[in-house]
Image (cartoon, rainbow, N blue to C red):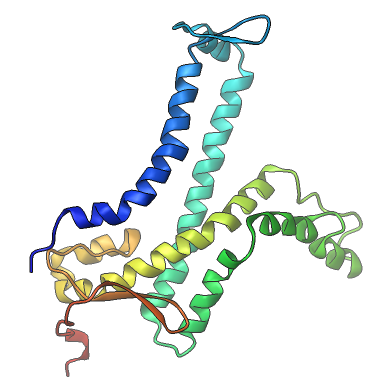
Length: 233
Protein backbone atom coordinates (compact mmCIF):
# COMPACT_ATOMS: atom_id res chain seq x y z
CA UNK A 1 0.00 0.00 0.00
CA UNK A 2 1.37 3.36 -0.99
CA UNK A 3 1.83 5.73 1.91
CA UNK A 4 0.13 9.10 1.77
CA UNK A 5 2.74 11.89 1.82
CA UNK A 6 0.61 14.19 3.97
CA UNK A 7 0.36 11.82 6.93
CA UNK A 8 3.80 12.64 8.43
CA UNK A 9 3.05 16.36 8.15
CA UNK A 10 -0.28 15.81 9.89
CA UNK A 11 1.49 14.12 12.79
CA UNK A 12 4.07 16.90 12.94
CA UNK A 13 1.53 19.72 12.73
CA UNK A 14 1.07 20.18 16.53
CA UNK A 15 4.82 20.40 17.10
CA UNK A 16 5.37 22.65 14.08
CA UNK A 17 2.56 24.93 15.22
CA UNK A 18 4.04 25.22 18.70
CA UNK A 19 7.51 25.96 17.30
CA UNK A 20 6.08 28.57 14.93
CA UNK A 21 4.06 30.36 17.60
CA UNK A 22 6.58 30.11 20.45
CA UNK A 23 9.84 30.54 18.52
CA UNK A 24 9.46 31.92 15.00
CA UNK A 25 6.86 34.58 15.80
CA UNK A 26 8.71 36.00 18.85
CA UNK A 27 11.98 36.14 16.88
CA UNK A 28 10.21 38.06 14.11
CA UNK A 29 8.90 40.53 16.68
CA UNK A 30 12.41 41.05 18.05
CA UNK A 31 13.77 41.68 14.54
CA UNK A 32 11.05 44.23 13.85
CA UNK A 33 11.56 45.98 17.19
CA UNK A 34 15.29 46.23 16.53
CA UNK A 35 14.57 48.87 13.86
CA UNK A 36 12.26 50.97 16.04
CA UNK A 37 13.21 54.10 17.96
CA UNK A 38 13.08 54.50 21.71
CA UNK A 39 11.57 57.78 22.90
CA UNK A 40 12.92 59.57 26.02
CA UNK A 41 9.72 58.60 27.79
CA UNK A 42 10.52 54.95 27.20
CA UNK A 43 7.93 54.33 24.49
CA UNK A 44 8.79 52.53 21.26
CA UNK A 45 8.25 54.53 18.08
CA UNK A 46 7.69 52.53 14.86
CA UNK A 47 10.45 53.35 12.40
CA UNK A 48 12.97 51.78 10.05
CA UNK A 49 16.50 52.87 10.91
CA UNK A 50 19.86 51.25 11.74
CA UNK A 51 20.79 53.42 14.71
CA UNK A 52 20.35 50.56 17.18
CA UNK A 53 22.73 48.36 15.19
CA UNK A 54 25.27 51.19 14.95
CA UNK A 55 25.22 51.54 18.75
CA UNK A 56 25.55 47.76 19.10
CA UNK A 57 28.76 47.54 17.07
CA UNK A 58 30.17 50.85 18.32
CA UNK A 59 30.76 49.34 21.78
CA UNK A 60 32.78 46.12 21.94
CA UNK A 61 30.92 45.04 25.08
CA UNK A 62 27.87 43.70 23.24
CA UNK A 63 29.67 41.90 20.35
CA UNK A 64 31.93 40.14 22.85
CA UNK A 65 28.88 38.91 24.78
CA UNK A 66 27.28 37.70 21.55
CA UNK A 67 30.41 35.81 20.47
CA UNK A 68 30.78 34.24 23.93
CA UNK A 69 27.15 33.12 23.80
CA UNK A 70 27.66 31.48 20.40
CA UNK A 71 30.86 29.79 21.59
CA UNK A 72 29.20 28.39 24.72
CA UNK A 73 26.27 27.15 22.61
CA UNK A 74 28.58 25.35 20.17
CA UNK A 75 30.59 23.79 23.01
CA UNK A 76 27.36 22.60 24.63
CA UNK A 77 26.14 21.06 21.37
CA UNK A 78 29.47 19.29 20.80
CA UNK A 79 29.52 17.80 24.30
CA UNK A 80 25.88 16.73 24.01
CA UNK A 81 26.61 14.97 20.71
CA UNK A 82 29.39 12.97 22.34
CA UNK A 83 27.35 12.21 25.46
CA UNK A 84 24.42 11.10 23.31
CA UNK A 85 26.36 9.05 20.77
CA UNK A 86 28.31 6.92 23.28
CA UNK A 87 25.29 5.42 25.12
CA UNK A 88 23.39 5.10 21.83
CA UNK A 89 26.22 3.07 20.30
CA UNK A 90 26.34 0.94 23.45
CA UNK A 91 22.62 0.19 23.28
CA UNK A 92 22.92 -0.50 19.56
CA UNK A 93 25.58 -3.17 20.12
CA UNK A 94 24.67 -4.68 23.47
CA UNK A 95 22.27 -7.59 23.92
CA UNK A 96 22.38 -7.55 27.70
CA UNK A 97 19.28 -8.38 29.71
CA UNK A 98 19.79 -5.12 31.61
CA UNK A 99 19.18 -3.08 28.46
CA UNK A 100 15.56 -2.09 29.35
CA UNK A 101 16.64 -1.09 32.86
CA UNK A 102 19.54 1.00 31.54
CA UNK A 103 17.26 2.74 29.07
CA UNK A 104 14.93 3.66 31.91
CA UNK A 105 17.91 5.25 33.67
CA UNK A 106 18.56 7.34 30.55
CA UNK A 107 14.93 8.50 30.59
CA UNK A 108 14.91 9.18 34.34
CA UNK A 109 15.85 12.88 34.00
CA UNK A 110 12.59 13.46 32.08
CA UNK A 111 10.71 12.57 35.26
CA UNK A 112 12.43 15.26 37.33
CA UNK A 113 11.45 18.92 37.26
CA UNK A 114 13.67 21.26 35.24
CA UNK A 115 14.00 23.64 38.21
CA UNK A 116 14.95 20.83 40.60
CA UNK A 117 17.61 19.53 38.21
CA UNK A 118 19.06 23.03 37.87
CA UNK A 119 19.09 23.83 41.58
CA UNK A 120 20.52 20.43 42.47
CA UNK A 121 23.89 21.51 41.07
CA UNK A 122 24.20 23.97 43.98
CA UNK A 123 24.19 21.04 46.42
CA UNK A 124 26.82 19.26 44.31
CA UNK A 125 29.20 21.99 43.16
CA UNK A 126 28.64 24.69 45.80
CA UNK A 127 31.21 25.77 48.41
CA UNK A 128 29.42 23.55 50.94
CA UNK A 129 28.30 21.04 48.33
CA UNK A 130 29.04 17.33 48.13
CA UNK A 131 32.29 17.52 46.13
CA UNK A 132 33.90 20.28 48.20
CA UNK A 133 32.71 18.61 51.40
CA UNK A 134 34.42 15.33 50.51
CA UNK A 135 37.61 17.06 49.35
CA UNK A 136 37.81 19.09 52.56
CA UNK A 137 36.98 16.09 54.73
CA UNK A 138 39.85 14.00 53.37
CA UNK A 139 42.29 16.90 53.39
CA UNK A 140 42.76 17.10 49.64
CA UNK A 141 42.08 20.86 49.63
CA UNK A 142 42.16 23.59 52.26
CA UNK A 143 39.61 25.95 50.75
CA UNK A 144 36.50 25.17 48.68
CA UNK A 145 37.00 25.07 44.93
CA UNK A 146 35.03 27.70 42.93
CA UNK A 147 32.96 25.33 40.79
CA UNK A 148 29.82 27.47 40.56
CA UNK A 149 28.97 30.76 38.84
CA UNK A 150 31.50 30.36 36.04
CA UNK A 151 31.46 29.32 32.41
CA UNK A 152 32.24 25.69 33.15
CA UNK A 153 29.24 25.44 35.46
CA UNK A 154 27.01 27.00 32.79
CA UNK A 155 28.12 24.45 30.18
CA UNK A 156 27.71 21.59 32.63
CA UNK A 157 24.22 22.74 33.55
CA UNK A 158 23.16 23.08 29.92
CA UNK A 159 24.58 19.65 29.10
CA UNK A 160 22.81 18.02 32.02
CA UNK A 161 19.51 19.44 30.77
CA UNK A 162 19.99 18.68 27.07
CA UNK A 163 21.94 15.42 27.22
CA UNK A 164 18.87 13.35 28.07
CA UNK A 165 17.09 14.64 24.96
CA UNK A 166 20.08 13.79 22.76
CA UNK A 167 20.42 10.35 24.38
CA UNK A 168 16.79 9.56 23.69
CA UNK A 169 17.05 10.65 20.05
CA UNK A 170 20.16 8.58 19.35
CA UNK A 171 18.75 5.60 21.23
CA UNK A 172 15.89 5.52 18.71
CA UNK A 173 17.84 6.14 15.52
CA UNK A 174 20.52 3.40 15.46
CA UNK A 175 18.02 0.62 16.13
CA UNK A 176 15.77 1.93 13.41
CA UNK A 177 18.43 1.52 10.74
CA UNK A 178 20.07 -1.66 11.98
CA UNK A 179 18.61 -3.86 9.25
CA UNK A 180 19.58 -1.26 6.64
CA UNK A 181 23.15 -1.40 7.83
CA UNK A 182 23.19 -5.19 7.76
CA UNK A 183 21.82 -5.36 4.22
CA UNK A 184 24.07 -2.63 2.87
CA UNK A 185 27.40 -4.26 3.65
CA UNK A 186 30.82 -2.62 3.71
CA UNK A 187 30.75 -1.75 -0.02
CA UNK A 188 27.59 0.33 0.12
CA UNK A 189 29.18 3.33 1.77
CA UNK A 190 27.06 2.95 4.91
CA UNK A 191 30.06 2.17 7.11
CA UNK A 192 31.45 5.57 6.25
CA UNK A 193 28.19 7.23 7.28
CA UNK A 194 27.92 5.21 10.49
CA UNK A 195 30.63 7.18 12.25
CA UNK A 196 28.67 10.43 12.06
CA UNK A 197 25.24 9.86 13.50
CA UNK A 198 24.54 6.13 13.64
CA UNK A 199 21.93 6.50 10.86
CA UNK A 200 22.50 4.32 7.81
CA UNK A 201 20.66 5.54 4.70
CA UNK A 202 19.16 2.98 2.34
CA UNK A 203 16.37 3.13 -0.19
CA UNK A 204 14.49 0.19 1.33
CA UNK A 205 12.58 0.40 4.61
CA UNK A 206 13.59 -1.74 7.53
CA UNK A 207 12.20 -2.85 10.82
CA UNK A 208 13.08 -0.70 13.78
CA UNK A 209 11.69 0.01 17.16
CA UNK A 210 12.48 2.21 20.08
CA UNK A 211 11.86 0.54 23.41
CA UNK A 212 10.81 3.46 25.57
CA UNK A 213 9.85 2.07 28.95
CA UNK A 214 8.86 -1.15 30.65
CA UNK A 215 6.73 -3.10 28.20
CA UNK A 216 6.04 -0.04 25.99
CA UNK A 217 7.18 -0.14 22.38
CA UNK A 218 6.82 2.71 19.93
CA UNK A 219 7.21 1.11 16.51
CA UNK A 220 8.72 3.54 14.06
CA UNK A 221 8.36 1.22 11.07
CA UNK A 222 7.37 -2.45 11.18
CA UNK A 223 8.36 -4.43 8.11
CA UNK A 224 9.36 -8.14 8.10
CA UNK A 225 13.02 -8.44 8.96
CA UNK A 226 15.47 -9.11 6.19
CA UNK A 227 18.07 -11.84 6.20
CA UNK A 228 20.91 -11.02 8.58
CA UNK A 229 24.25 -12.11 7.01
CA UNK A 230 26.02 -11.98 10.36
CA UNK A 231 23.80 -14.73 11.80
CA UNK A 232 24.09 -17.15 8.88
CA UNK A 233 26.68 -19.80 9.30
